[in-house]
Length: 360
Image 1 (tube, rainbow, N blue to C red):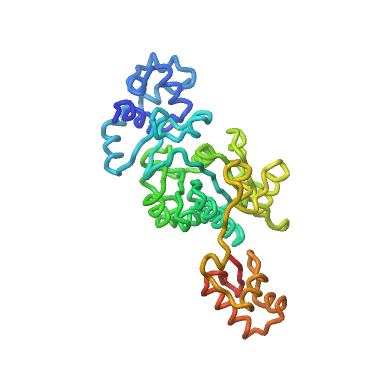
Image 2: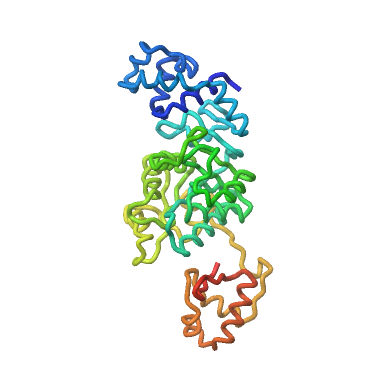
């Protein structure tokens, strides 16, 4: 491993140094090692460090570059810099790319990637839409990128994994932490078959200010960002706006006009985002694959009786109460319960709390 990356990691551990200041230090001093060794007089000549050189020296005295590097080795963390052959090429193109990335897993170069993001607080419709879109994209060989947050992000990662595809989780903390803790199991799955990455060093906590910074990586890794559900004030909208600044495509999934969780998506659609109903809309806009072949039930080996098929067509993709299904179908309660059970056992519908049902 190059000596420079050891000092780059050390610089990245200084609390107030980010991509802009680290870049200025290296340009001024010639290398990460020289930047680490720079005396006060040299640091005072760097405009981006105005008022900070003495603070930098104070923090620098408390950091042992070799010891910090050994900690990374202990945690089996890999590091990438923009000079690395395996550093994601699209990420190199953004303004102020991360000077160092900490990773578990591997980035598949020359494979297209799409981000799927949305609200932590979301509806069943949002969760199922995110899973479905991620699964379709993954089935087409597209890498699905998201932020491991609860809600839409979690569903996107799960959908890609369920389809046997590749997914990337971008964290707003160090790799020695899992945030949110509830996603520890999911994080382990992603580490095993996909990629977990962050620009934050070990010990970095999931501070609120880290997430907008994290979002620029989510959009920067990808050709486009899909917003599934988002209120008007949402981190997902921040990601979408950053994607536009990075000259990447933005997509939005429409929702019920009465839902506050869809207002952010509708705002994006009014502003020109591409409306997404299926994976085909995404791939068509990106000029990649003309359409997605989603197998019909018969092609999946699932056979339905005529009454089951008729009822299946009446069940929407958003939750509907059993009483409404009975009213729509004209079936009796006992017959309805029997058919719903058969469809659920065949994996074509799911039952939700309160006797609500929805189609996959």
